[in-house]
Image (cartoon, rainbow, N blue to C red; front, side, top):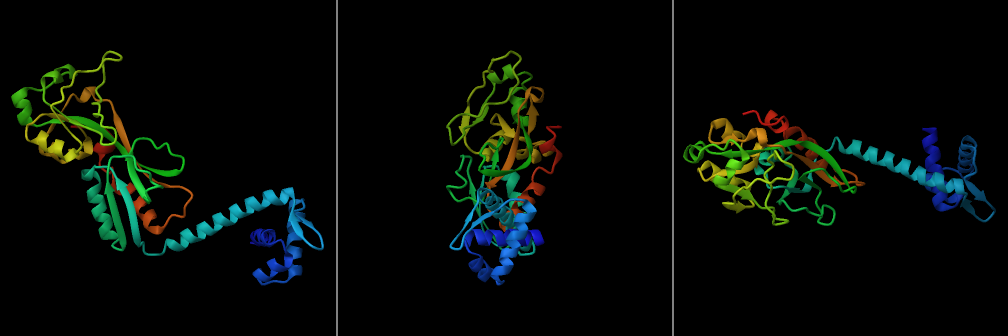
Length: 304
């Protein structure tokens, strides 16, 4: 604590350029301030101030020490604030951007609302890459590995892509045994809203550079639409495993070409770094990381 008080005194003298002014602001005598600075200089083995009868200025060593001291005191202040907020009831508006994967996030979001009724969730569902800081989001959930150094990231979990269709469709059109067989099937595709490109079906090629011929029978930018069409015997589609877990368990859909599927995806929560984290954001991040991807199918690959 004596060292910490030395930091506080030094910073106050450096900012006011006056022992007297620093003493007044801290409620001690100017001589006490002078003695504290002298002890600090003796312990460090350097002079921190150039002193004259008219002014006090920082030495080169003092300038470096001031930067470090401010950083240390800021960390202590942030820690104190975080600990004090840990006992507060989370409240206030929380602006969240989420991808259009409602089957995954809606149950958890509903539970969060019940557990934290004083947090006002402002939810924006979109697959576009939002500007978190520029658009004023508190936190976003997105797939892929984060690359923006301005953001903190929390890994949520992995998922796998599956090719699925209904038993009625496969009874009528046959079960594909090889990716080449897809050329004779009705295929339902997803278009990325941000780029307008079709999502590539992650089928492992037996020849480097070879692309399988996959017909485009229907295109949309909505997961639930493709789930609905597949269940109504309209064709085969590529979907994340968590979107069709219940349908697979009930036998309403079945997977095909599992041995040829190769891509695994991941989700992260992202929020601006360098900011004090309010309790409502902290509990949201902790809650979502605990509730999502808790079932084995999402983390360990398909087992159907």
